[in-house]
Length: 309
Image 1: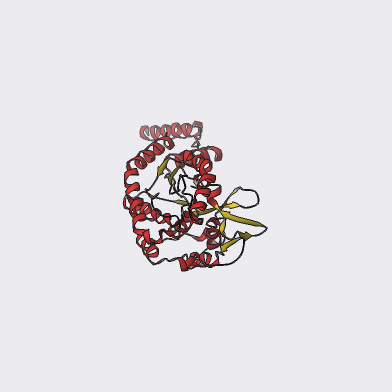
Image 2: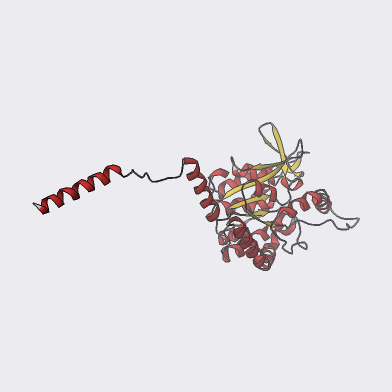
């Protein structure tokens, strides 16, 4: 009987305790708190976006291939590519997924007849349609937004002088517009606007890369500098000098915004006649890029530290 009483008392006490205990609901972050927390985590751990801004410089643009080769060798991850003129040509091919070996092979096989369709128009003696078709063939007729890497070709609006960043649409047409050197190539009509060489507004398209979300911009400058001209200098020498003078202010504005500037030693190479100097240009790009690797690594470390604070 005594044991039964003790058991009854124990059960009563247990029931009383249960009935008097408050239910504790786990505290969970609100939707806003969860979103903020997730954003914080993403900010701390997201990889930085590195952009490669390839400048214009006619056939000296083969130096870009050398730069890309060294960046790949050193496993510098490029997510964004912007290009002006010759930089748009190389940049579009690279953004399409070509390896550096494929880029070098294309450079080896490329000749003036592949990209020059002559015309007697007073607007320019090269139409540019051949260049457009060449690029579209090589990128397998994909639009800019279909390319594996984020890409933009920079051209200049002929009617107002503003830089235009083509980051969608017909790849070949955008590259053609970006490379349409005034008085050499005819302006490219897209919609109601006419476009010419991007070198007039963004000789090295750093601004375009920043607007596309780059955390770090590696700029490659292959542009010529104004120099004293001989009195009997030919048409292309005068043209090269004119473009160099016009783009100096715009060039410096762009380079000032870059995290790293690579300047291959290609000033001795011809602006137009350099198709037979491809290997020299590629080698110059490789040499300049190797010298810049330590600076690039420091820039990446500093940016990672800044983003993860």
